[in-house]
Each structure stands twice: as structure tokens, then as C-alpha cells.
Image (cartoon, rainbow over all chains, first blue to last red; front, top):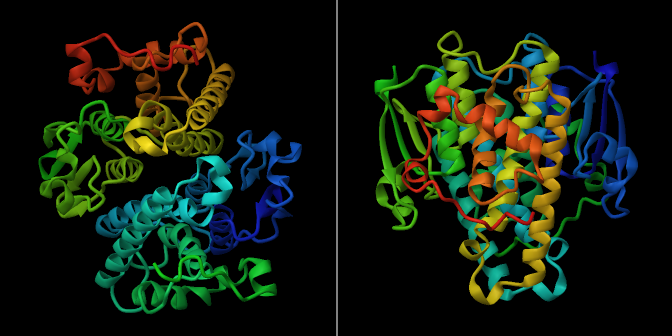
Length: 225
Length: 225
């Protein structure tokens, strides 16, 4: 099955990583894939634009079907391969409700992280304002505190919605990203514990961003948050 | 079942409208609901914050379960009430792939509409730039052209992914919103046809924003797009 799948991806990109974790969890190894460079602008190349007209990664295909929206791809893979690998959508209504809620909230977390980490990438020089930087940082801190709170209420050493689920596949890359960019373990102890719990999960280890392995030292842009 | 559901909503808000369409499609009428005013800041009221800590609408509950993310709520409702009302996730892999892809792309369309229509709401006065307004409008036009293209390839008078699905429940409110704010029927004929097809669907008529009925005249901010 996985032989008919192909993925164009960028290293460290949470949307790409979500799809790769889900493919591992569903035992869909062996798909074709190609690592592209955001720095070189390869996400705007013709190869990508033919699959993903917004010029974004991932650009994912299963046979003739295109699924570039990471959350859409994860939902599709779980629904098409329900009985293969790990089950990623819980049956109980209570856990299912939390799962869908956290999964979609994960996209807000991505946006708020990007608005701080990539401010200078997204905003042209003469449109930048210290007041916007400050507001974005405050919004990100408030967002991260929400997640810290969510993890207070789950059982010790647990996942976001019972067993490991699509919510974790979608949210974890954001959390790893936050720590890579300097988030303080002392300020966010529950997030740090969640990060420690999941980072050694086989699906996550197998898909760890290669350039993070090559240079384990991250950045400190979030350290005072 | 619907008696155990409650919705705090704002009129015309695409995220609220999505959930209301889905509730209608699943024959979940009779839920408790309360219309709040964004203008009066009621989305930041304590009633909302207790359910939705980001102070956003919708704030939706099914019994003890909270689903504030509109797409999450729609997915949950379809999965919990699969055999009730209309089936909103197609079975065929081809249609399912398109459905998940379009459903999630719908959130990008929302963001791009908001960045134009609510620019002055979101951006403090001394951080506004004509160059940003121009870029946001160009990005929205490119986005709308993508959707115009998607509708070229579906059968005449058709929905986004075969029969009416969650993709339509999630995307339609954005399209209605665009025409409410002046989008040109001449510039986007396929979107206009899609809008005409869906606006009389019972689930959509039943949930049409009340203040749009009261004052059918819209705005013209998007007319030159």
C-alpha cells in the first residue's frame, strides 16, 4: 500500500512531521519521499506546485489522491487503514470529543508558534513593529499555558486523549518545535514531561528531523516565555 | 440527544455556522442555543470563557464534552451520529480524500477572508500598512481562484466531494461570507453557482444568519477582487 504513496517534505516542519508520524503508526513504511529545502525555496518548485498549488509542504499523494493538508491526510490515513497498525481515533465518545478538540486546537498552536518564531520571515522589514512582536509573544505564552493546563488534567504520563491518538500525532511536533526553539522546561513542566514521554516513541524517533539530530543545539527565542 | 447539546454562537461567523449546518444535517434540532454579539464583546464574557478559554465562538457542549473548534465539532457529530440524518463523510477513498483535503483547506480560506475583511479589527491602527492590505487582498484573490478552479472540475451543479459532505458544511459559510462582502459573481462564476446551489438547502436556509435576513444589503469590500 505504502508503495503507492509519495511525500515531498521539509525537515522540522510540524505539518510534514504529523503525516510522517501517522504513516509510521499505521505501519505504512516504504513510501516514496523527498526532502526539500525551505531555505532554497524548493517548496515553491514546479514539482511541489503540481501537487500543492499553494507551494507548501507536505505535498502528499496516495495513488491519484492528493492530501496536502496535514490534518486531512492524517484523518484520511486513519480512516482508510483503520485495522492496520495503531488505532488513532478512540471509540469512547468522551475520548473522541477531546481528541477532535485538541487535534484542531493544535493548528492554533502552530499559528501562534509561527507568528513568533518566523515573524521576520512572514513580515516584510518595513512592516515590523515591536508592539506586534510583544503581542505575538504574549499570545503564544497564553496559548502554551492553556496546553500546560490541559496536561494537568490527564493521567500522569498520559497522552492528550487517552491512548496515543491523532491529537498527539498533530500536536507533538509543535511541542517539540517549541522546545527546539528554547521553551523553558521550568516554566512549562507538564509540556516538558509530555515531550519526554513521546520523544522516544518509535514512530516519533523514526521521523525525528534529521538536521536536529545533526545539530542537537537549538535556539533560544522562546526561553523567556 | 440534541437536548443535551448547547451552543453559544455569533451571527454570520463561519465557524458557528458550520456547526449549525452539521447539527441540521444530522437531524439534531432542538439543542439549546444563545446568540451573542461580537460588537458588544460578549464572546469574551465569563459564560463563554468557562467553555472556550480563548474567548471565541462557537462554544459548544454535548453533555459534559466540550467542542469549540468548529471542524472538530463537525467531525465529532458525524462520527457519533453516523446513521442519523445525512451521511457527511463519503465511503469511497477518492471522495473521502477530496473531502478531507477541501475541509481542511476551508480553514485557510477563512483566514485569508478574515485578513482582508477584518484587517482593521485585527491590526492596531499604528501597525497598519497599505502594502499589507494589498498583499492580503492579492493572497485572497489567489485563494479564491483556486476554489473557482476546484469547482471547474466537479460535475455541473455538484458539491465539493460527491454528495453534500462535511467539506461543504465547512466551506460554504466562507463562500456565503465572501458574497455578503461583495465578491463579484462575474469574476467568480463557479463560486457563484455553488453559492446559488447551496443557499436553498434546508440545513443552510434554517441557519441563515438572522441579521443577513434582516438587512439583505451586504458590503462591497471584495467587489474588485
